Length: 374
Image (cartoon, rainbow, N blue to C red):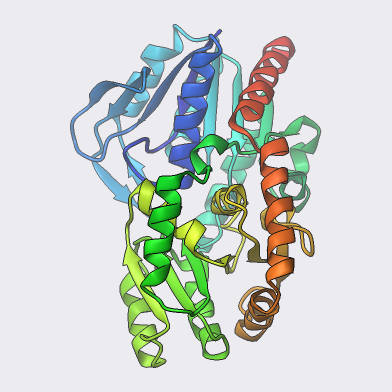
């Protein structure tokens, strides 16, 4: 079986979907599936690379409009590669790839991984909605990361009969506590004295809700470590200064995999305070749970509370509510036994339901079903 994966970016571009596609492509190759990737380049030239054994074509980018890379060679390259594949796997939302597939891809079966509704661009979203619905209707099958998202997305409800749940998978072995990790974690923790440590990891985007967490820190006796960079970094650093919280909130910037893993084992709990449906699941929750961390997240009607089960692996609170966030965090900080219990359950859940191998196995079955329907 030869499969072509479509999206806008790929490694080394950092992002949850980008990393998901990288893990998926590598895993498919390991299982004998001939997987290749077609994305756009960050510059104007088209490049053909082999990354981790995966053939990757990055077509030249002319510009970017509303976070969407525009690449005219993408259409030409898709037509060329279409002739050699059995199945196209489109990762949405990415309107350019969806348009290209709608125009050129009728001859080959297409499946779609629907990662998130478009939330912020409301005006353009209204124009995009009829187009997206047509793309979804033409797909052989559609994958979503949780059953909650299928039922709550206005775009997936109309095609729910051909939706399937495929959990994001993570490499659980990457999150084991080794002696090196233990030493790194102890060194990091020693920098902050006896204060409890809270941890946020992620791109600093509008929907991540870090501003809500910063305001909650007024009522929390702890240190907050923020790992990541992004468009909201400057605004949120200014907010920290304006709220006189620079002694409690530390922006660490981007960190290496080793540094990030040490932070997970140094901290007492993980917080994902996202504010809207752009947060479809929160893979960072899975990574925290793989390290035995309890999680505090927000209820968005998406998959955040599907992953982090309230009262079992952590606590779930309403979005945009600093007080509720502080109450939940303080409750966990006050009970080491509860944190330990939730950490054990979180690790068990990730290993049993969100492993990389399970994701690959379910995806291959997904492909086989799509081909039978075509």
